[in-house]
Each structure stands twice: as C-alpha cells, then as structure tokens.
Length: 106
Image (cartoon, rainbow, N blue to C red; front, side, top):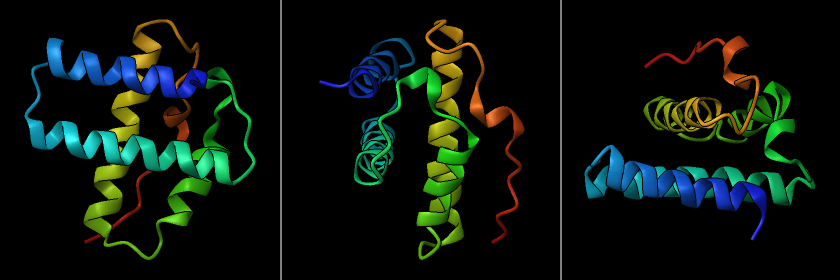
C-alpha cells in the first residue's frame, strides 16, 4: 500500500468514526480520493504526500474538464478537506490548496 493510499484509508476512518459523516458522503469522498490517487499513478507521478503540489492538483482538476462544474467543485472540496486533515495531523507541512483559486462557475 502506498503512502497516499494509507493516508486515504486513515482519512476515511477519521471521517467515519470521528466526524460521523453520512454513508453517502463517505462513499463520494472515497471515490474522489481514489480517482485522485489513480490520476497520480497513471500520470507517472511518484509523489510522497509531502511532495504533492499545486501543479499536481491543477493537473488533476484539468483532467476533470469533461465533468459538470458541480462535480468538479465537490471533488475539489474533498481534496481540500483531505489536505487540511493531513496538515492538521502534521503529515504535511504546507497544504497545496492554499494558493489555488476556485474559478468554477455553475
């Protein structure tokens, strides 16, 4: 299991047991995070979590250009919450979302 996959599993546990999120939210968080992980793997990115930067995030968001704006915003929100959690848990020093602007319109 990769470091990112372990972090995703840990985050799912946190969301389920500490935040008590609904099963539907947990399902979509899992889908969104696994899709991000797959994007990194397929793109040949061999990042450790601390090395994921805004370039990787922008690449992922660009890969979603065929999706509806509402879907892109949800996926962005999922990743933002995930990286906020990683920062809070001191697994990363800098959240790569700090310098990304959300220009998606409905």
